[in-house]
Every structure is written in structure tokens, then in C-alpha cells.
Length: 486
Ligand SMILES: Cc1cc2nc3c(=O)[nH]c(=O)nc-3n(C[C@H](O)[C@H](O)[C@H](O)COP(=O)(O)OP(=O)(O)OC[C@H]3O[C@@H](n4cnc5c(N)ncnc54)[C@H](O)[C@@H]3O)c2cc1C
Ligand SMILES: *[C@@H]1O[C@H](CO)[C@@H](O)[C@H](O)[C@H]1NC(C)=O
Image (cartoon, rainbow, N blue to C red; front, side):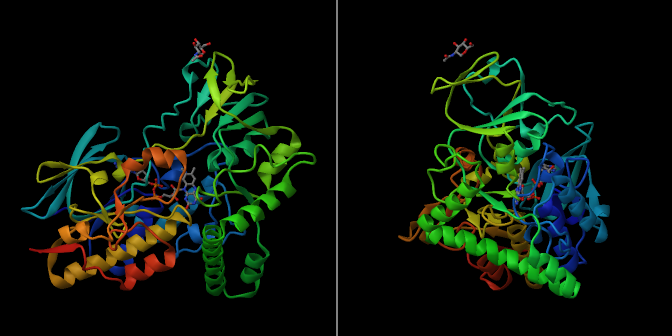
């Protein structure tokens, strides 16, 4: 007897969304959700730095089954966390969660076609094993315990405070301090205006990033919500944002030079009088080769105009007890350094996997429909988009999982395993492809944490929502998948 039909790991967007789909489509299957933390929310529970917010619109980042009805499309992290929790409670999903349960290992047994989860409870005070037929890993894509080793020369010499945004000390008083944020991604762009309300802040970047300002409240949303019945308004607003991000990303990919000129023209208008795009605002790459940073109502540029925020482009030569020395000879003298240089990527929540006693590494294998991995039976992993809302991809995986479960039941099958054939691998059309379509430094360096992807279906990386959701609902789920009977 197994403890559960399905064990879900993680209570972020992915885990909660899948629990909903499961309840909706397979109410007879038993499940539980294991979560290391003390509360629901995943990313939105862990990250607590000042100003933390989404950089996607909440209409598509929110769940399709519990539409985001706020007026603002980009909101504070605490509101996102509350929303995820409220959504779970509304559907009774919260009663299935076991908090403080960290999955350390997963063991597959081919003789019983089942998984055994090795779990530590309440920071290893207790140990527990649970069994299930199927596993859904909503464990996100980065390491929750360890930040990225920032590799900044001389950082350990610094005598002031060094803070990583992943572990922001919420009791830190930074009023009137001099702060240098190292980095230029979404986190740095978010932190600067928020910290600059109380401190003198410099964002030190190696190279510029695209920053696009968006109005925080849209006229369309307000009108739709006012004049249309709720369900229709929500659908229209969601569709608008799906199309908006789809066209924006597609436009940038198809017409990179026009997109670059357009974005830079908009940026130039937001700069303080007398400030030029050179040297801090002209990226060396094309729009959407790295994630585009959004700032609501131009808050980033307002902070620069106020004089409390500044931006500097340069390379760090060394850091001493009290100064950051740049290769240009310039020096910065902060009280606090914030290393916003990226996340330590990780796949599968750091869970040690064995198959019939043999260690199994996810990153050595190809991904099947970006949802399962070659040779790994009955495990679905949830990856979202990096160039659209994560949730859209997570839901595409959740719906695919439900369809596979239905077919397993219909065929009386107890295990499914992706397998690549020798013909596929030897085919002239077969080429390896990057798993993620982003060139951010930390993605390049950490890329080996992800499974491999290829040029031919079903081993391709994620493409875009419409295609992925169509495949999840109606596409071929036979090719590349071995179905094992009882
Ligand atoms: C600061 C920040 C801002 C972001 N903003 C956006 C945005 O605006 N739009 C967007 O699309 N994406 C954004 N992202 C990406 C974001 O992580 C995803 O959108 C989404 O929140 C991920 O959801 P998830 O459920 O897949 O994973 P997570 O939110 O990472 O949740 C994973 C959960 O699994 C648990 N877990 C992991 N391993 C184990 C284990 N071994 N045992 C037990 N539990 C485990 C964790 O504790 C956690 O609760 C952002 C990321 C960060 C860091
Ligand atoms: C960096 O600065 C420290 C402290 O001042 C010094 O000891 C070290 O030699 C410097 N390193 C380099 C490479 O200049």
C-alpha cells in the first residue's frame, strides 16, 4: 500500500497550481504537498528585500482559476504571497500541506514502480519516509539554502556589511547609509528606488540593461472591471497581457534593431535633463536576449532624478576594507554592499535521486516536453517561462501531467519513463540546444544545473505559451515515452 498516489514538493506558484489541477481533474487521486518552509509562497516567502515585487504583470502571473483582480499589474512581493495563500485556502489545498518537511532523497523501485521520499522534519529534528506512485516537483529553479558565490574580487576584505538580497536582514536600518548595489538585473533595478527613499544608493553595473517603464495602473483594466461582468473582464485583461508580452518578445526577436531604438528612445525621455544614454543605459545585447527589466511609473528614473540614486558602469578591480576600486581608477566608499548578482541555479530542489539504488543526475539527461526527464520514471518537474509569466509555463506542465495521469489510468499503466532512441540521437536534425533562452551571466554559468534540450520534439526547450499549452492539451504524448504495465 502506498501512502499517496502523488506527492507534490513545494508550495510556490507551481505546487499550488498543480494541486488545483489535480483536484479539478483527478479528484479521486490522493496527494500531499511537502514544503520545507513554514508558509506558502516559495519565492515570495523567501525574498524579503525592500521593494520586492513582480516584474511580470499579475494578470498572467496569477492563476487562471483565481484571476488577479487588483488594479495594479506589478505589485509588492507580500501581496503576491498573500494571493498565493488565499488561492490555496479557497480551494482547500492548504489542508494537504506538510510544512517544515524537507525532501532530502527520492528512491525509485522498479519492482514496486513507486517512489520513496526521505524527508527531514523541522530542520532535521525528525526523519520520515513516505511513498507514492507519482511525484511532481514544484521546487523552483534556484538553491534556497545557498546564494550565488558572487566572485567579486576582494569582497571578503570589506569591513562594512555585505548583504545578499536572497537573505535580506529585515531588521537592518540603512537610513542615511551609503549603499552600493552590485548588479543590474531585476533585483538591482527594484532595490534602487526603494532604498533611495532613505539612503544614498549607487547601482554599480558591469554593463547596462534595458529598463522599460510601465504605468502601474492601466486604463483598460479599470474600464473593463467597471463595465463588464467580472469573469469576462478578467478573461479579457488576461488575454490582453498575454498578447502584450507575446508581441513584445516576438517583436524584439524579429526586429532587434527597431526594438532597441524604440526602448532607448523611451529611456532617454526618462533621464534627468543633461544626462545621456551613454555610458550607463545602452546595453551591448539586443532586447530580450536577457530578461527585460520593468519599472512601474518610471520609479527607477525618478530615484536618479532625485539625486539619491545613481548608476555607474565599471569593473571592480579590488575591494578593500572600506572602498570599491574600479579598473578606471575611481573609488566608491559604501557603508553597505548589496550583491545582486544573480541566483545559484538548481534543479529538483537539491533532492538526491536514486533509481534502483543507482544515483541519478537530472542534468545529465534530456528533457521530455520540458516536463519530464529521460530515464526518470513518474516524475514531472515544473518549469515556467523566463520571457513571459512563469505561471503560464507551470500551468502548461500541470495540465500535461493531468493528461498523462488520465492516460495511465485508462491504459492500466503504473509507470511512464521518457526514453530517447538511438535513431533520434543519431539523426542529422538532432542538435543540443540551451535549456533556457537567456544570456544572463548567472544563467550561462549555472546552465549545467538544468537538463539538456535538443532541436527535435519531444526533447525541445520551451517555446511559447500558445504552442506549449496546445501540446499539453492535444499534442503527441506517446513519442519518447515508455509506458510500463503493472
Ligand atoms: C526576486 C524574484 C522575482 C521574480 N519575479 C518574477 C516575475 O515577476 N515573473 C515571473 O514570471 N517570474 C518571476 N520570478 C521567478 C519566480 O521564481 C517564479 O515566477 C515562481 O515564483 C516560481 O514558482 P515555483 O513554485 O516554480 O518555485 P518557487 O517559488 O521557487 O517555490 C519552490 C518551493 O519549493 C520548496 N522546496 C524546494 N526544494 C525543496 C525540498 N527539497 N523539499 C521541500 N521543499 C522544497 C521551496 O521551499 C519553495 O517553497 C522571480 C524570481 C525571483 C527570485
Ligand atoms: C586588494 O586589496 C587588499 C586590501 O587592501 C590587498 O591586501 C590586496 O593585495 C589587493 N589585491 C589586489 C589583487 O590588488
